[in-house]
Length: 280
Figure (tube, rainbow, N blue to C red):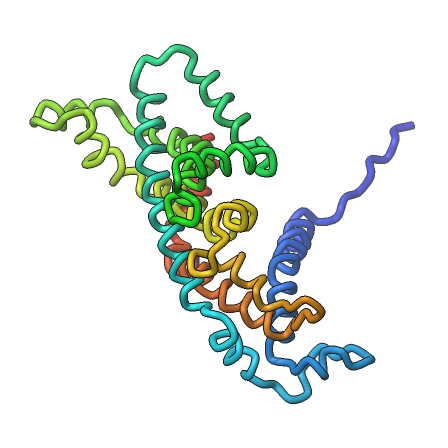
């Protein structure tokens, strides 16, 4: 007698259910923070807890910009993230091109080492980085954050770019070099434009990683005027008080720039991620 095989739910329903869980996991916390940011502290502490604010207020957002110099924190975060991303993409592109085109010994081993480096816990690097930056007299400066951020993002960005560079025919670069381009010129004028989705994907990953980083920013920048946004938000709490509505408003201010960036470049980012997955 044949054994009956178990019946599984419809595949499409399972996919939709998984997508709904992922979307809820990313969207609901942000929605909760947004609702908290327009509540008064009295309403927030009231029992039973209410989800929707009874009397929405924007006073928390006003205090975000008046209680602390958040505009300065935003500028520091933006400048550090942009400069670090530019440095990271430049070096990662050169490294990925060398791994794909030059006859390096054991390129697979080099990629494995890069992956291992990317898995190092950040806490294990704090003390060496602090000692290095103090020896170089770079503490409380932008380079103290730009250099580590760029290095920490390079392994992932290099691996992303390698997967794209592998699909570019050598003939295109050879034609460019015959026309007078150097190998580096062929990289910047031929390979990079043809792999724009991959470059944008790597750049967004590096930018978001820099924008969200907290531990190094807290350790390497102790002066208020040099603090980035994640560290600056901690200044809103007092010794005996934790004003959740104001901190929630500050978190929304921090989320908005990254959300706009991803929304503007979402086609290139999604295209880069899916193309990279298909090529892999």
